Amino acid sequence: MGSPMLDRQSTALIVIDMQRDFLDPRGYAAKAGLDISLLRAAIPNVARLLAAAREANLLVIHTREANAPDLSDVPPSFLEATQRTGAQIGTPGPMGRLLIRGEYGTDIVDELAPIPGEPVFDKPGFSAFEGTALGPLLTRKGIRTLLICGITTEVCVSSTLRTATDRGFSCITVGDACASAYPTLHAAALQMIEVEGGVFGHVAVTDAVLAVLATH
Image (cartoon, rainbow, N blue to C red; front, side, top):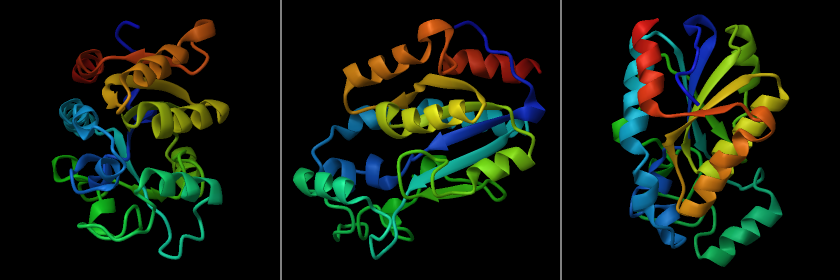
């Protein structure tokens, strides 16, 4: 799409799962055999979006995929899937137990660290709305439009986008500020957004979003 139309008062930036466990070579993704260089490619544009959103006084929200220490909130099927990758959730790693709340590896990378006042939601699943207070926060703040970025495009970004659409939010996915370890899936996930006239909203590029935020 071209330059998106944004109302600052009713727009929020959601940064999905930019965590050490996904972006650090000692973390979950690397242990599971994923090419984290592809995931880390999103960092520069996410950083640019964060800076612009903060300058424009947008609500900025961060999420982390983070599970209970006793694994009580991990679906059995997903736990089994992580076993097959050799990076089972909850197993010890160089940065603590993989994808467990409170562990160093589960936290957001330093380059994109939240600043005071920015909400951080620990989600036990893929969508940022499930098992969190994100929905009530957005309602309370009068948010109607979501700028979505982060990782991975085909899993947690897509899951959050679909839930947000079902809940009536207008969504703009910033495609070049998202990433996947699978380029074909990244491309397909972005392509699906704008089918049927934009059934899941629209896709924008970082430069276009920054231009709009700079002029409003």
